[in-house]
Each structure stands twice: as C-alpha cells, then as structure tokens.
Image (cartoon, rainbow, N blue to C red):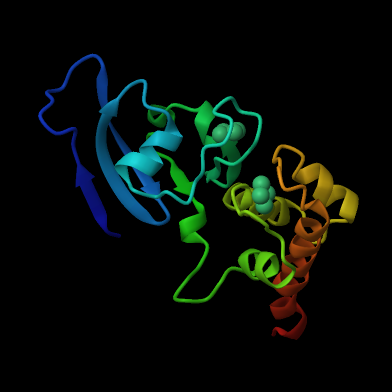
Amino acid sequence: MAIDVEEVTGSTPSTTTRTIHVTVNGVAHRSTIQNRMLLVHYLRERLRLTGTHIGCDTAHCGACTVLVDGTPVKSCNLFAVQVDGRKVDTVEGLEKGGKLHPVQEGFHLEHGLQCGYCTPGMMMASVALLARNPNPTEEEIRRGLSGNLCRCTGYVNIVKAVQHAAKKMQEPAKGGA
Ligand code: FES
Ligand code: FES
C-alpha cells in the first residue's frame, strides 16, 4: 500500500496540531494537521481531492458526503482528526482501472445530473445505500438519499440512476458461479 507522508510546512508539533494516519481511496496518508481542520478541507486542500464539494458548510446539503469505514458522513461536519486510523472513500475512488463504478455509470446513462454540484455526494450516498440494500424500492432510494439535496431538482433521474446501478450490481451474481 502506498504511503503518502505530508506535514504542515514550517510548523512544529504543538497542542494545536496532530498527526493522523488515514487511508483514503486505498492510499495510506500520514498528515500533520491543525486540530480544527474539517475533513472536507483536509480532503480538498491537503490531499487535493476536490471531487468532494462544499455546498452549505452546515451539514444540510450533502454535497460533501464521503464514506468513513463504509458509512456516509457529511465531511463538513467532522474534524479530520476524527478519522485518524480510519478508512475514507471519496468519489475519486469509485472508478477502478478506467472502469466506471455502476453508480457512476447509472448517473451518466440516466442523466442523473444537471449542474453536477450535488453529484459526488449523491453518488457516495448511493454507494452506501446499495451496500446495505442492494435492491431498494423507489421509496427506499428517496429515503436513502434524503440527506442529499439537488438544487437542480433532478431527483427523478437520480432515482433512475440508482435503480440502474442496483440492476448492474446484481448482474454478476445472476450470471455467476
Ligand atoms: S457542505 Fe456539507 S452538508 Fe452541505
Ligand atoms: S445536479 Fe445541480 S445541484 Fe444536483
């Protein structure tokens, strides 16, 4: 596993900084950060993973949703030090080897986005939803994504995108051993 080590330039250890170890999209990082740094800022500014968006900054919109040990969290509502020793997945980690994740494919093929601002958070919430409920009803999808707002109001196609992904993710099981 790759280890990416970074420190706060020019700073010395103090009571206001802490070194954390976190695995993001399968890459281990050791980072010295300000205690008060939010997870979303750590991901965007320190790791340059700008796919995670900031919308409201007040835990309402869900644009900043990432997975921490598989659980969707609003990364504007968590300090980065709270993920010390944990595994974080962001939208950048969905595509593997040039192949889109079924959720990404669903959003693409079903036109599940307009401006795209809510999309990374919607996708991460969808991944978590399908992990705990592989075959959700429309109502379960709507409830599962109720913490994520789309200002373009493209909810109908977002539901279709998740339904597409659910179907696609069941295909290997159908044709499997
Ligand atoms: S930016 Fe985090 S919930 Fe809106
Ligand atoms: S596609 Fe624009 S906010 Fe959702």
